[in-house]
Image 1 (spheres, rainbow, N blue to C red):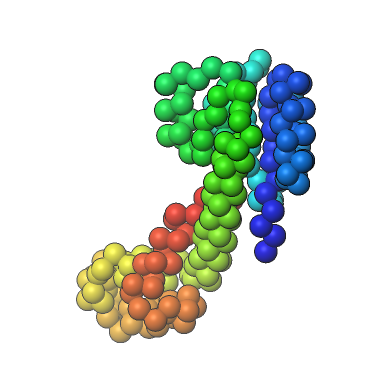
Image 2 (tube, one colour):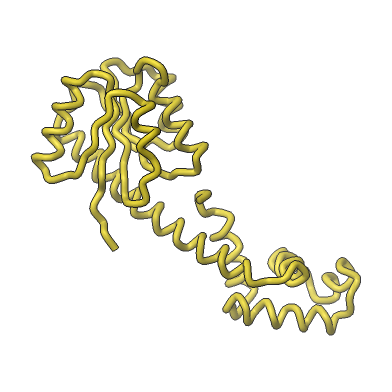
Length: 206
């Protein structure tokens, strides 16, 4: 799997943007620069490993609004904020909503590279989490409606007798459904079933 990180840099100051691009290219880091949030949002989506290097204050959309926009699109791209001035509320909100770092301009090269490495690690983890979640969703999609009902109740810790009562069926029928669920999902225990359901629910939306 390609572990190379592509950086999308968004800053309304062309001089700052060119300086960022030169620094990153010097370190052989792929970068695409945008002088407006709207041009960046029009560029999306991007399926590879990526990080967003994002100015906080820009005309039109602020950096925080861009962060919210990509979140609403179901994207899990790590964000590093840049600002010529940084206030505590904005920093706290950015970090609370998942930003990797908040760097004050002019950014020191070493601090920038360290932040981008943290972003790369986060991006790799998010991609793996998404892969696991999609696999879980695909496997769960093999179940019939009734099998999924039984699956959820088994995962909730109910016994066959309780499931039979709740779904108005015999215990024998519950056992048949449980067997089918086990085979279709490829799990060998209730713990593995719970883990599968958790992986699906914990996955970022696609």
